[in-house]
Image (cartoon, rainbow, N blue to C red; front, side, top):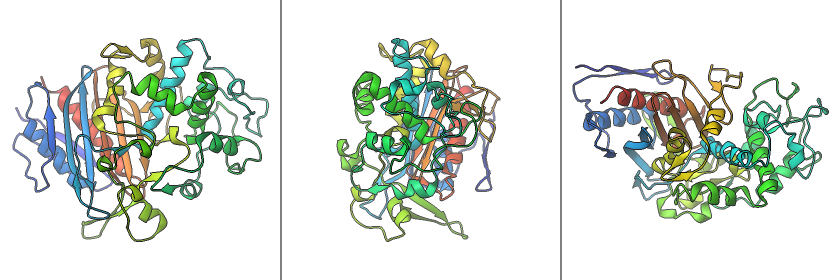
Length: 423
């Protein structure tokens, strides 16, 4: 039976049709693992490899979760290119920065404490802070946990100029998370400015906000009396056996780190690559792999290094009613709460839940998850609670306009469609 899947790569102007005949490719073969699920593994691998090659991604990891377990994974391209070198292929254990897909951990941690009776989602966040946070245009309107997790707090997203100004390279950031938060959101803090808040009333509009999510993580620290990173390590990473996942470079083996690249598509169709530090600083690539890693003080918003297969443990939790291998992370009711539409949408029509958001899939079903993007890295983590399917794709590459996310989202959609149609 002929199966046809249309891959919409609108931003590259490409349309690929998958048919019963094998897909001819010239790219380096991807590493691949499958379960016993009967389907044409070579055909799927060839199809994905072609899409990765056409996207310009230096490397990609991808996994497919079905019925709460990983049934397929593939690795394509390179984790490190000749610059800074030495070239190293993408492997199952290559560690990639997943950017804002890291944010999923914040609502999970908040809801764990809600289940223990330590907070209510509609509490004033100031109840849990050592200083007051209020929109100066609306000083009498409390900012709540729910507002922070649905991006409706009126705390604006940072400007690109400010974000780029606080990157450091090749080491942990000298500014601690707590210091950053206090000086970003406390009046007269050294990172505070007139652009921290939007003029609209808190709770009335969705404005995606790194600082808003970080404020929830910072407030949580004052409930659990430890750093957010230590809490996540103990309460999420450890029970889920996410042993290679970390917020901090110092805890990771350098020989497994990938390098993030900003991709330039030339008029002749060829691709050129600059490591993220070289692109941000406008200087030649140099140094070691570690020298070409980026660091930020607001780690809960986007600094998780992981592998696709390991971070997919979180997807299995969502699809297994909150548990994995006997470890309960959340109740089913909390998971349902995360997937409940808030009434607010992204500009492109995606639904916003509690810490999760998502589009519809190729068959019109609502997906939930998160995507991430920054110079040199992109990720897309989405699942369908109805079909119990999910896919997670990560790349160590991104375009200056951050459009690699579209490629990874389309890859997720078509992986889920493939397995929804397989026995």
